[in-house]
Length: 247
Image (tube, helix red, strand yellow):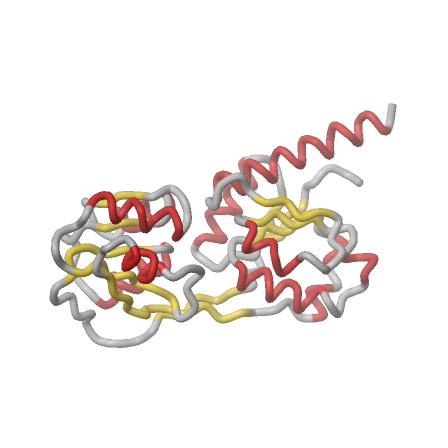
């Protein structure tokens, strides 16, 4: 197999653009074709009565909150570096990052005990994990406000026909992985068997288990940096193996 070069970026914007830029800097050719579309939930100002802190599990949650509330003084707990950066860019100054996933975020919030009020999770309609339940189990008052949704966009037959031109696909969420699986189940097995998937976490990789892909890699940590590190390491390994094969 030739070294990995053309890469399908499936995450929704604006994150897809950032991932594509990092891939270009590494010398790869990204093609952004999201498998998810983010849609903000319309509504009036968010009721923050009794809220002591905000919890964001994605930059989309930050954007959705910022569109509906001018509040920027409350402490913020972010799931990872990218979400924390989005919160700071939106005007928040008291921002703590868990540098992980929802399971890592709850203990970070509990350890800091943000006052006697509620920790409000600005969430999607289908959250990847139950942060409110995790916080409640740790003795933290928590609530949830649904502020956005992600809609699956499975690849159509025309796009699936382009799969032989891709060496790898990057996946950032279980919902995107399920959308990919739906599209690949009707594709030519010979095409699918040459595609490698790089996944943000084991939960993201799970829907791909029975597709017959060439390989399914999982990042060492659930963030974009670790995912791209995994991808770059695999690309280097493939290149080295190809070099040995031609000697």
